[in-house]
Length: 322
Ligand SMILES: Nc1ncnc2c1ncn2[C@@H]1O[C@H](COP(=O)(O)OP(=O)(O)OP(=O)(O)O)[C@@H](O)[C@H]1O
Ligand SMILES: [Mg+2]
Image 1 (cartoon, rainbow, N blue to C red):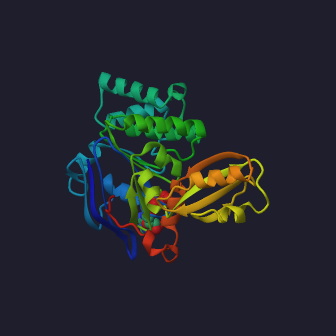
Image 2 (image 1 turned 180 degrees about the vertical axis):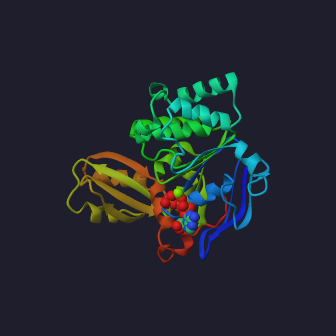
Image 3 (image 1 turned 30 degrees about the vertical axis):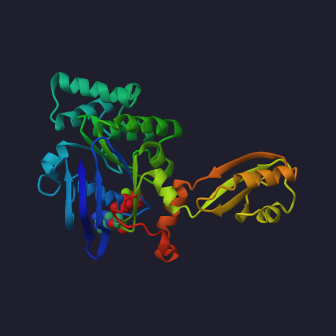
């Protein structure tokens, strides 16, 4: 549904994005994850035919973003970083205006309006001036305008920014409900968002794609060792040293919780039995033992730290899939 092939965008001497390549299938939700200035918005603006790429091609539903902008725009709902709302209109007036721009009229327009107002829970502010809305409601109006013509492709630039936790959950649910029938790209800094709503994550840094995979695979691929967290009722003061002597244990780390330690062993090994037997034998009161996986946040920080800080073995190349 979306096909981006080697796109580069240069602003004078600055290369905002550098040979970016990825695909989004029909019904798929893809997260575009990256720090400030990574090139997320630039990529989205190329996909929505707002700006042309300097090199490379981008296609939406088979139409070229540079050559056939009208066809592309028809099939896309776009929520820019700053929602394009008119302060002096009411919510209903504004959405009706956008609907007309999208070619809707008569009962089709009324139905579309009711549908997005219901979907974004905007009923209570329908007649209010946009200027008087809170930031979260304005963001929802921005999303409503992206959905009004029920486009097959949605490009959402940080859709949950400025929303409160309850609204964030609502918007994530909404995005999840679009999966299957729509192709969605969303950009985010909020890492759990990627795990919560997306089947696939593209991590972009300094204009380049540094990783592309499912959230689970990404953390698995960067894992260097197995970690288990062990919580004890009565750990001795030298619990770290004592656990270090257990065969197979490579490292033991204290945590902020004095009752919990992290035990590391070689990748692929399972030393839970030995650790449990040892803790029980010492009468330390084994309360809990669980494997620890790397969070997407760990992965993100690892992949987006300065290049000279990243061990070469961690580099994941563009387009590489497991
Ligand atoms: N119109 C422009 N003219 C010159 N440079 C630009 C322009 N738009 C973006 N850039 C630069 O391109 C790079 C990528 O910017 P972009 O807005 O795509 O990043 P982003 O990933 O969306 O960041 P953020 O998370 O802060 O929104 C940045 O260095 C930015 O300063
Ligand atoms: Mg941006």
